[in-house]
Image (tube, rainbow, N blue to C red; front, side, top):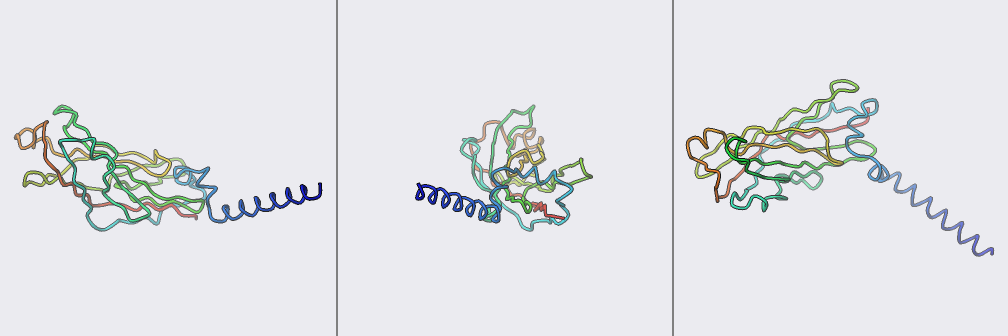
Length: 201
């Protein structure tokens, strides 16, 4: 009986030590908290220390197989990642070829960091907005096109956001420089990324 009691006591102490270790390391927040919980907690966290990410980042996409582009990386520094989340062609009336990027960041009980094409801004205690900072160009058939923004979003994922572009401007279709049934490779180059940082006040 004494050995069972001693074993139980040892298990309880070991469990407490392991829990304390993971609590100090910040893992419990990873199990129970999402990035949006930190972003929305304006009483404890501030977003005033973010900054522009210098440089241009490129990814090549295949117009002959749009689905094959999903998962291709635009940016990866080991802690932050931006990759192709979706790509489609909605026809001339819908703007033609479009692409969506997913941005993945890091977070813990001490704050969060997200490199994205969006700057997430706290307006006041309960109001937030997002502005597109990124610009994209599409190099295709010897020409470079300025890509217009398609969509922006808030922190809608557990660890980040998403943003999207039209690949080509309307006049590229109107001039028959691009059709709705292309088979080539397009080099997409994105600049103006922003590192959103939320840290304790």
